[in-house]
Image (cartoon, rainbow, N blue to C red):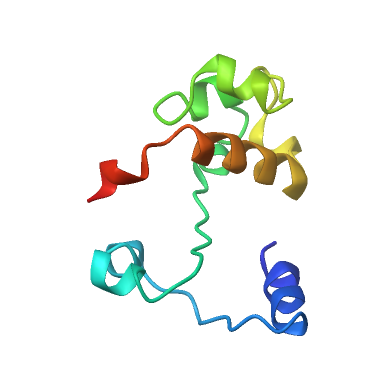
Length: 101
C-alpha cells in the first residue's frame, strides 16, 4: 500500500530510508535527522469488520472522523489510501508536537 508513495517520493528526488521501528525513529535525536516521518498505524485494518468509530476510538473521536470526511460507521477495509491520508493529516494537525518530548 505504501510502496507506490515511497517510489514516487524517490522519483521526485526525496531521500527515503528503509522502514525503521517506531521505538527508534521517534527518539528525539534520531527524529531530528529527518525532515518528515511517515508512519502507518494499522488499527483500522487490525479489527476487520469493525467500524472506524470503534477501531480508532483510542486515537480519534467521531468528530475527527467526520471532519476528515469519513463516515464513523465505515469499515477500515473500505477506505482508500486518500481516506487514510486525510485522516492522518487531520489528526496530525490536532496534535501538540511538544507532547512527544
